[in-house]
Image 1 (cartoon, rainbow, N blue to C red):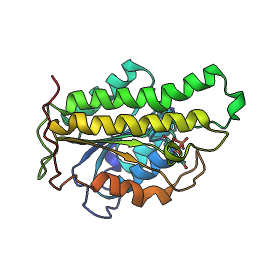
Image 2 (image 1 turned 30 degrees about the vertical axis):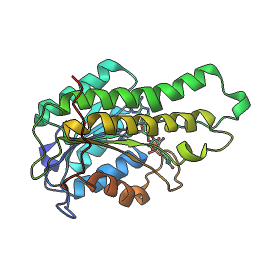
Image 3 (image 1 turned 120 degrees about the vertical axis):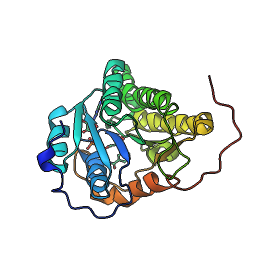
Image 4 (image 1 turned 180 degrees about the horizontal axis):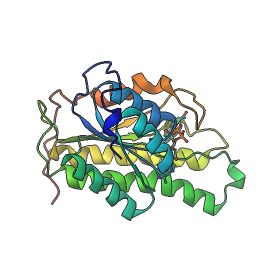
Length: 239
Ligand SMILES: NC(=O)c1ccc[n+]([C@@H]2O[C@H](COP(=O)([O-])OP(=O)(O)OC[C@H]3O[C@@H](n4cnc5c(N)ncnc54)[C@H](O)[C@@H]3O)[C@@H](O)[C@H]2O)c1
């Protein structure tokens, strides 16, 4: 899971994320994998989680990082994945809540099971990963040289705002939900010094392909406010 032989083989590009501990879901391919590569080069310590455990492990071995097989639609897997992060590091600074699926289906043909599967992965799972991570993060000390306890990043989509196209109604609806819970969580968790943002993947990319073009986008999402003092809302923590 943590191949020490690989440590030191990865050439660091910057130290912008030095020592920052990051859990990435959906890390075996596409956006998650591209972000893992970039964050590793910037000095982050990573736990790469994916339904595809072999894919996550292969990348983790290459980058000298840790991996875990997890299906984020299953509550037990979410807990196991977060348990592992806290066993490894005793804390978690960033969760990149990114795992998702897409499906092309004409609006008039979307079946109930297709709707349910889409919402279970892209919205329900995203909410419970966020909730479980926040429950743990609120008890940890702030990140070094920061007032933040942690940061939660969800991968939404431009489809959330413009309704997707006519063949992705269920996908667009799931991402609109991600935008909504991100906004609510940002307010609910501000008092704990946990920031919550969405990462809008606005580039057109092929699903399943490695997508290095997303790097600047994600990099912005991770770094904004991570070390800067945010403007906290005057809120009372939820019990
Ligand atoms: N590619 C794009 O153009 C684009 C645009 C907007 C948003 N997004 C979003 O970006 C995220 C990543 O997409 P991608 O393009 O990298 O796709 P991808 O298919 O390359 O990667 C998604 C990863 O998530 C994993 N995954 C799927 N279901 C899972 C589950 N239940 N538990 C754990 N892991 C699971 C897959 O195994 C895969 O490795 C998704 O949320 C997607 O909706 C992508």
